[in-house]
Length: 266
Image 1 (spheres, rainbow, N blue to C red):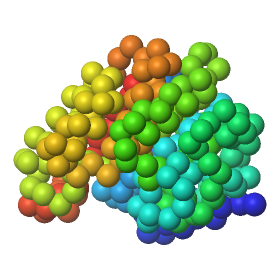
Image 2 (image 1 turned 180 degrees about the vertical axis):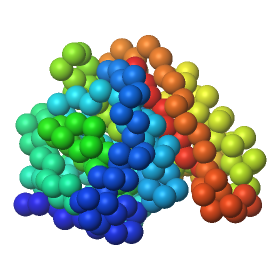
Image 3 (image 1 turned 120 degrees about the horizontal axis):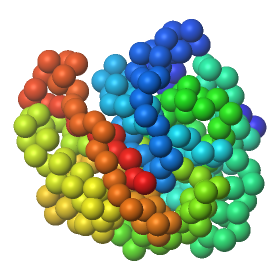
Image 4 (image 1 turned 90 degrees about the vertical axis):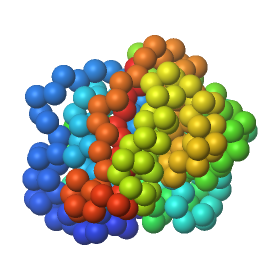
């Protein structure tokens, strides 16, 4: 069973040649790569956030499997939905879903469940896959769509993922998130950097609380909290902000922007 593209031609080019040209433009080939536990990358259309996402993917050395933690924008399916497809199709070809890692997670988890419907149309997962294909064509993926939002559940989910990412053979995580939505650029930066600061401190609880208390419209806070908790339990020692920007840099509209950030955890 193959999951076919839902947003090709809308969020990124639908043709293989055009998509590859775009990725070559967005991902610097000469950037210094490193092994990381996690990457947070934005998920808007490539014209808006692709450059920021590309700065993140340019700096990581992908593992044999990448765990994708996406936002459930549509509200369908399980709260922690592990994709059940055999592969995902993009204009660049098929990417295998790691059935072995999926089985390990589902066998040991009390919270994650297999559910292919939750991510079937989810762009926050799909837009990350061509970047992975570009930087590491042989890498497999394990897509997870996150609708859970209670802090205890998110921290527990991170605890359950930690054994899969720990050690030299562990999987890398990608948490898919945009930042503030539809506010003035200066205000977006002020709020978003409060959230980024908690991430740089490897503080998933602090990230959750500052987003809640300051009403920061960071759509992927739940995947980011899970990623941070798993990375912390797997021995993370630091984080680095690679990019912060907003949609106004492209559109020219500085009054209603969406913020974008790329950040690595190592």
